[in-house]
Amino acid sequence: MKKVIKSFIFVMAIVALGACNKGNADYEINDKNCATEHLKTLPEDAKRDTLVEGCMTR
Image 1 (cartoon, one colour):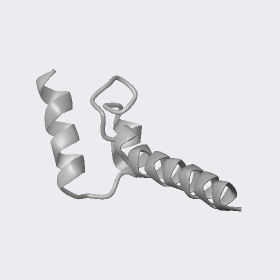
Image 2 (cartoon, rainbow, N blue to C red):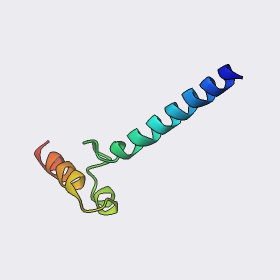
Image 3 (tube, rainbow, N blue to C red):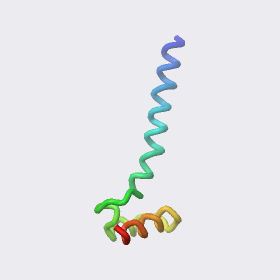
Image 4 (cartoon, one colour):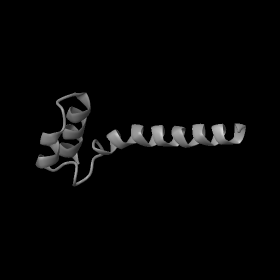
């Protein structure tokens, strides 16, 4: 029973970490994320401003 619980906790930790990193993929500087259509879908915040600045200077 302890192995099942440890396995479950391990899988849930991996899922949680995967979910955390997904949001950052929208802010990586690349051709797809620098497209005007993509930038319009992002909320106006500091991460979006950093992405716009990075797109302009590349």
